[in-house]
Image (tube, rainbow, N blue to C red; front, top):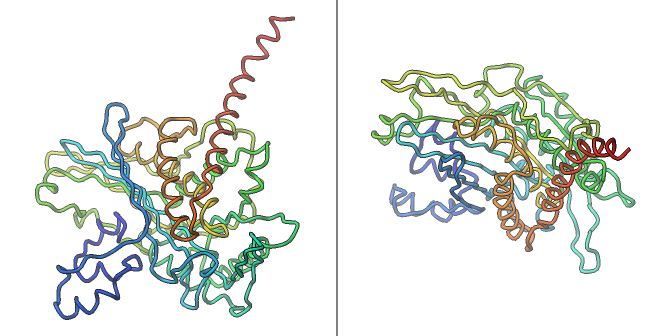
Length: 424
């Protein structure tokens, strides 16, 4: 119902837990709760996805959990629910949280990172047809000032803080304009909204045609998405907390008052953390090293320690802002991008836990494939809920296969010239 960071910073029970966009039976149980004045007899239902598994890294048992929480607002299936409503609620709005946890004898450690997906926040629709597999996109001119779009991003800012990073994956080249119509309108909406916002609240808009680049032989699409993911992660960071044995014994997992940092738009005191950063297209990203390993970046602060009794406790890290990803259905292409962000975050999460020496992530590692299975299962589940059929996992599989072949070619290019010299 609530993210790990939200629970640690602001622990709540009872009535408050039902006051959330992710509890689907809030209305049905309201009468019972009002009469009994308690929540003991009701169960809050969350619709989405959950998967948890244990794996070993360097002899340490790590628990990986992936949770997807689907919003109950403006809910419905594909083609019947598209875009945004007057209240700023979008279709297929899903919050994804990736949690990494290590159970130790001493202070235990836990980390989480949250990302979001949702339909393009404009008034648009599609007419279903048995004869047309790709129905035309109809853009409705009922909100010329983009007030509903503005409300949507204000809601995201209240939930996650700044910066709000938008990764738009829809097509830029089409013989018959469909997706590109939304691309133009979304581009215009963000520019108009940003023009009326202070610099620290500006939306960061990134556009990249995943379909075009995934078919290009000169572009390793997944590697480029990883670069974008690392940049986004450096801006939003992630949640990390270490809890001392004393806190565990008291049964109080929430942070002490001295370590609390507010969650939401006050989470970051740095006035520059939300500066405008508008990128119309990511095709200018250098492809020189897309066959190599991912650069984890160095924008995330190093660990610091506080003394709590006789134990040294690492200072907590907090996520500020969120990465919001969309395509047309917010299913297949969005799932690939969310996997890339999850993989980038996983390296940093394991590094914060002390399980690995470097946050660097390799696409051909067993850990990468293990995480891929998590996101594939989540993608299938969300696709069944919204679209009625499983996701096209071949997209993610083909990208990983290309990455592996690309790396083998890079290694081969280092040795082939040496053998060529011997043959002369």
